[in-house]
Image (tube, rainbow over all chains, first blue to last red; front, side, top):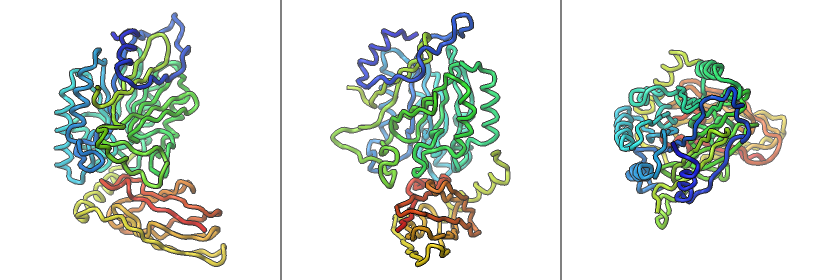
Length: 296
Length: 132
């Protein structure tokens, strides 16, 4: 178990900013309190394994370096999640599978073996998730960890960025088994809200997913897709996007095209990284700590 | 919306056609259609081609108040035509003309984009209306 002191020690080493998320003080009363405990997990996102281009001349090494950095964390996370775009898209089904096999082989080098995967549109949109399922299993699922209910929502297997009625019904039924004040974390690839529709940074039926989530008082969403940190509130629900492991993208809607930020040879891997997310038993808040690909 | 077997088949067919037909990503180019109707009540028709990974034209000039009917033909995929400022979108199945009616009341630039992921280059498939 990671206690608070250990986490602060890790935070000091990480060099990033701790971002508080959630609603402190919303924990359930002691009488009906689920078995919460302190823990932390690591979120990695948007690896785009197979990408080659000027935006990251080190693309063949970035994931490997991130794996080494995660493995070197003083206290290992209790689980690791990749929030989509494990691979860069290709029209060739054989090449897609080759990239997934290579990605999986590198990810198997993580010392922590409790690793969760989900697809991004680059993995799944050209074949409705067929190759992804062969390598990584279901594209949407739920699991519990130390009292927190985690839900993985697939908003990419449909190339039109729909969650879809079938999955929305599943989500509603899954959450119906939770108390309204249960601690719920949603992992998804695209933002569930309209972050920048002119860049397609949205989920077409995301409002319906949010309608299902809204009655629950302790919901936090972690996602990828936009290759940068972004923190947004929809009512009481916090949304946190993660950095990428291939190239950063401009701030939402800040320019006409969503072209990658140029590689800075004087500062390799600038703008890339992963994060730790700490959950504490005492309240329904999450502390987010950003880490670079390579730590000094 | 549940995905039917028929829908899935259509998408897969579109993706397969793309793989066979497109050998290399085209260089992004500016294709401008200038439509400046004299009367704001005029209705004009603009033919648009959608193909991986661009629209032709990808810059459409209109006069404020003009009603424009986009007649869009997709060559290789079920692309999308999304105009966020109008909260309007359409799927563009290959093999037929899809009509999208637009009207902008105020001058400015308004983006349009493909919102159906169509491959490596999808992120560049966009254009804009220039309304004067």
